[in-house]
Image (cartoon, rainbow, N blue to C red; front, side, top):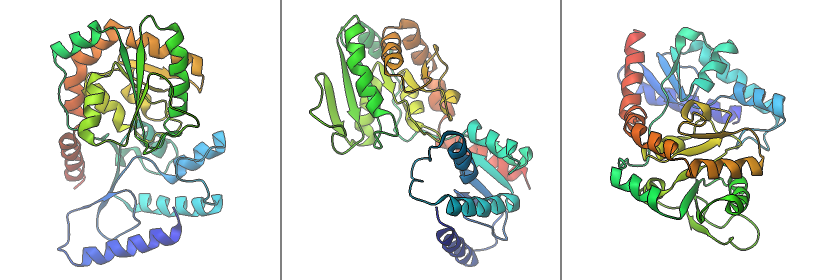
Length: 309
């Protein structure tokens, strides 16, 4: 966040580059300042975008609270200088790419939305699994997020309590991510808290759930959405940030407009009872896994770099 740290990081990068042959290009994961070599920046968010969000909503992006606005503005200026000197910016989302272009920070010809890849190992859903999920009487809702409040976990638990009252069949909620139960009081009935689990355990929860719900209040991308869709499981997110790029309302899940718990409860019931959404997610799971792979991202990044020479 702070300019001093950014300067130290830039010096470290320059020192590292002195020890290697002159590269065709440098790929910087995040922005680390100006260097003499051609540099491409791969990012999910930027300081200018976060400051715009703060000015419009009064809310800071995740991790920014406690940092003075003046410091963030100086850091944004440094980042703008890096953008002006770079050969291209590769973004995880169209949402971030569109900001860079409309703000004038980077020319459209230098902005490339390459998206991101799946971190949880993919196991394609089978017809048998889909049939078993649709036949069982109980429906399973999954929430995943270490940063419980930012990811909307409090909304999911509250909506689950309301959804139980209107759902035509029993439901259970699995909460994964936080190391400890994050809300006051005892864990509610029919809520299973599994904590911070490894990728393979999360994969099984995603495969077996009827919906993954994560209405994040701030989400620069949201890899868990594509991981769930690759597992054939519908998702519910928020109509904001990059989430609408992955979720088509009524097609492979639903998008929440606000923090309205009743609306979220209604969406949960609608999605878990929808055979058509379940079938669509099953049919599209292979395409999701194929596109949102790090191999594909790497190929696209390489093509961008080669095309700029």
